[in-house]
Amino acid sequence: MSGSYWTSTQRQQWQFSKAALAKEKQKLWVLECQLYPEGLNIVMDSSNGNVNNNSNGNNHPSVKNIPILHRDLHYDKDYNLRIYCYFLIMKLGRRLNIRQVALATAHVYLARFLLRASIREVNLYLLVTTCVYLACKVEECPQYIRSLVSEARSLWPEFIPPDPTKVTEFEFYLIEELESYLVVHHPYKSMEQMVTVLKQQPYSLELSPEEIQNCWSLINDSYINDVHLVYPPHITAMACMFITLSIQDNTNTISTFNDFMARSQVDLQEVMGAVQDQITLYDHWDKYHEPWIKFLLHTLYLRNNQQPSQSSSSQQQLQQLQQQQQQASS
Image (cartoon, rainbow, N blue to C red; front, side, top):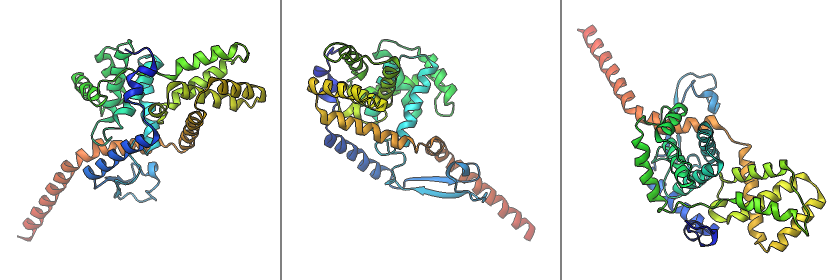
């Protein structure tokens, strides 16, 4: 295990420039368009009319096609899906009292995996469970697999199989896609180091517990976007601290922190890039609509599997009606 980010596999294998990351996303986008050109058909009926506001008082179901070129269910473009995945990991982690660092590692595993694989070819809920399971082992706070699967099934019973071996099977698939590079360095340590340095001369800036907590929360939220695939951990920590202090609107505090950034000799363009990514995230967060993404995933994983049985039952009903008509005519 590498004790330094600069010599770690995270920097050497899993840190991209924005251009390289866009190229990786484009590869997956083209692959999805080739594998799923028909898109996704969803049934708009009275049961989900409140979700998409398309029922208009009409109880007759109608089928709507979401083209593959639409951003829905593309992890790189759909912030609705990104935020939902973030909440899935946090929800499972809180049920098991898992440390935040392990959950952050699970977020990184999920983002890396979905850079190489489509959400349409895997069970997202099983992926989340497996990412948490593997992250806990790597961060040395392992969970009993039966307890983990039991909690996951209590949250998503339709999607998590009762057999724990399904998680261990998926774990091999996950490790393969991650290329066995599992060590992740996080911004939390960099944030703590900056807090310590800011207390000293010549800065003499002591952050309040509330400001430290706000910065910590911003780092947690940053795992929704791509900053951990693009920037080093200290850049993310500095960007989150800059946002935290800027919100306070204290001129002296901001001036002192700007002086600290200048003396630190960090790439200020990268810091501002990370700040802009965070602002973009919160712009999308205002439009977050959980019922819609849950409905799409339910349709993708469950309703599509039910369509053949539904069509066969419809054919049986049609045959019965034809037989009745023939008997009546004779």
